[in-house]
Image 1 (cartoon, rainbow, N blue to C red):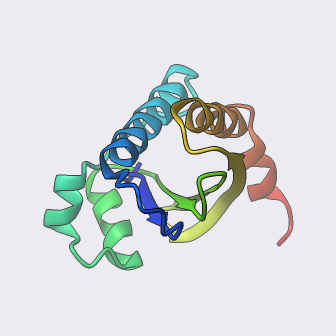
Image 2 (spheres, one colour):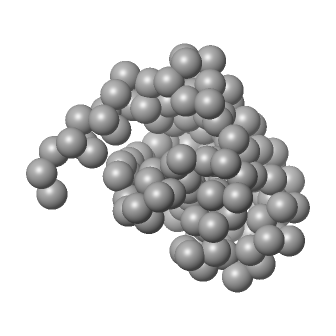
Image 3 (spheres, helix red, strand yellow):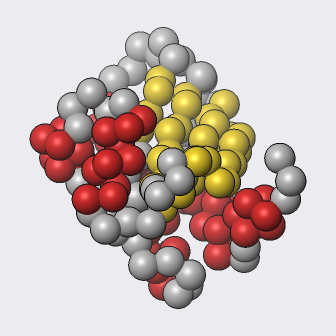
Length: 142
């Protein structure tokens, strides 16, 4: 699992960097914990420092190589997009490291830029993985 990222295009005047950094970390840690706890995945987290050191360009090939070197079979990438204080989106992509193919994706909308809305988005997303939505999509014809 790679560190979560934020794309903030809201142009809000209030500096929310500290809140967003904390929320991204909490969301990533909670998602990793929920996936591991469910016994569906053994989550290997790539730290931001390791990613910066091993893959400063963050291009797709380098990200996949970094996941491979960490011993991962799959690579999970997540981005939160904040377009306003009310409208948030969460984009998650799961890649098979061996084939380098995307095997599952989820685009979620959630309301509000606060701890509770981020927590609910993470809980919903974890449920999608734990209850096999990714398996069903991966096996469906594309």
